[in-house]
Image (cartoon, rainbow, N blue to C red; front, side, top):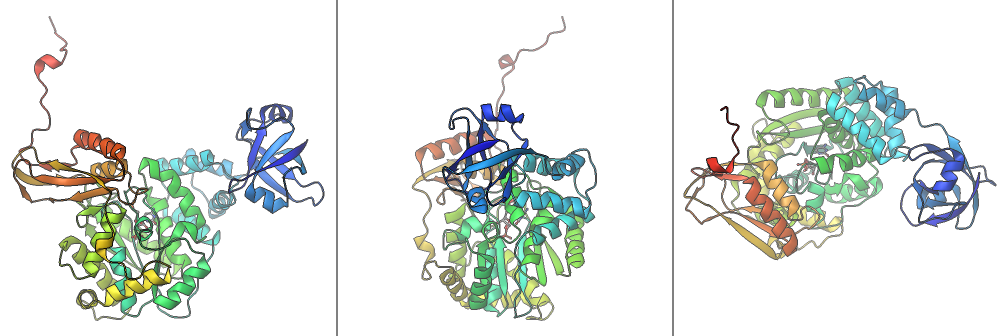
Length: 512
Ligand SMILES: O=P(O)(O)OC[C@H]1O[C@H](OP(=O)(O)O)[C@H](O)[C@@H]1O
Ligand SMILES: Nc1ccnc(=O)[nH]1
């Protein structure tokens, strides 16, 4: 069938056809078509997306990349034929049926994802099937390799190239903003790529974006790292492991991070930047991704095994994840807290201790410090101001304001303090509850949104004293977050009556 092209200014491949043309072609939403340029013979696949309103029959709306790939402009004519669905659909179905995917099958799925031959529904099916049925280590290795091979890679002339990555799950985990400058200040090369929030309210990419641009090509990442020794950029923009961000987009609304996909997501990014020595931070706690020490050790073994299969030296740090790292949750609040520590603040202890511990392991692995001497070296790079100086350099090389001060980074204008309803001690902070409230307040999208924990586990509070403060950039977001905070009670003060349900409020089934 011949159709007239209407170019639509939407980034990406594919397009939309009219219901009448779809009926004549005999296709439904989700079927496949092939769009062919009649003169050049160039062709591109297209997932059928049917409309009745934005087009007239006889016209096909094509998105930017498909038009550019085929050299098409508004008003051109194209041939449109039905096509067979890609074989990756069969392989996704195999995973749904609890099958084991071969390396070739995994590669086909990932290639089709990256080439936009799979619709969002189909990618969601793959992520969900893997979440429910899991992946064995061979599948994780195949996924990691496929993610690397479908993107760009960086090779550095200086060695060793080191890196760190956290599996996430603990709110307020802003340590990368300290670890990268500490490591780079020690003279090591650390091309850090991070994701945005997956299960949290602010991923490292969301945080760094407060200070500097984070979208760079692989070539730019390499150049900037050579200049400053380190960078903190968003993995999703680099074309380094581009499938990663497609999977993360599916995971984000559900706050899920399937184990195999998580290992592949992390290790693909490390491998693609040429990291030779890597520390993986595995926070453990009842409301994080990993609940017990035993599970953490098992996950650590898997990371180390995948690292060794790829030729990387990996060590894992199992860290305390019962409650947030530091006190701040959400982009601006976290950045201000991290900067203040780099500027010399002696608190929060949890943030400083975790950052120097992780940095210390890397310094030891890379031979910069003696065994057991890494932490001390990291602490002195932090307290001497060398890490701050390096961070300013990193911000500058990425195009940010290099003389930024923690006091420049402000939380949202709208705030509400949550008072303790009783006198007592804070006995628990529920990470997932805090994240839900912070997300409703607008984080990570609204940079000023988030939570400041005025009290942490063990803090004594008198009735009416503030447990935590919610920040937002609009009253509407603040109200939504407050409503959820009242429902979830993410911080429990001992002696607190959570609810009182009188007998006459419930209809009892009487046995008379
Ligand atoms: O949203 P959740 O699932 O908590 O974690 C995601 C965060 O964890 C990792 O941190 P880093 O890059 O090692 O600092 C990711 O890159 C991302 O920023
Ligand atoms: N799944 C992931 C967890 C943590 N960091 C990542 O980049 N990816």
